[in-house]
Image (cartoon, rainbow, N blue to C red; front, side, top):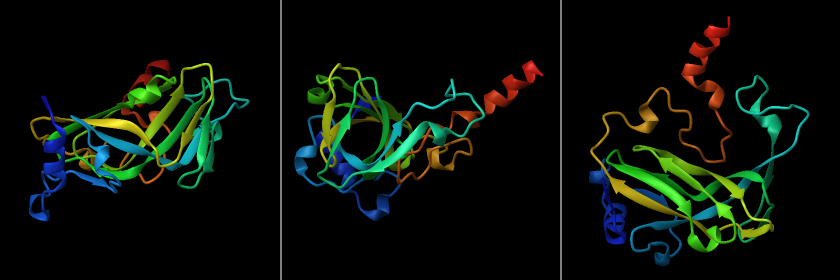
Length: 200
């Protein structure tokens, strides 16, 4: 797989509607400076789901609804959000994206924020469409002040062979056309049903 340069990213963004199978959609792009040498910066959204302590001793492969472990909160564009040490927060990107079937995306924290202790990583499968749910983690010892709408992560795109089935058309895909942060759907993993039979 080869990495797309900023010029190649721009060319994919500028494709007309006759080339929808190859067109990359990232909207809105507020500034051309979001395009770097081989990546494009994405911005922090305004809807957050903050992990909170509960009386339940476990989170993950449990029967309790995932919503009880998180509290939703909203901020306005330009308003600050404080990320505390060892805190897990889910947030959406400001941008809606659609990845064509011949590209794979990797996201990572912008270097300047990584040096403050912020850690964000994920992979974006070919054919994904929606806003991205980001898992914010503060690995530092000090709280980090973030501003909604700031450039937060960098998206690197890799060219690949087109996949026969896009992410959104795959029946086992769990995160499709998101417009807000989506909690973990780990309990929907099909292999867990098989594993449970070993305990019966």
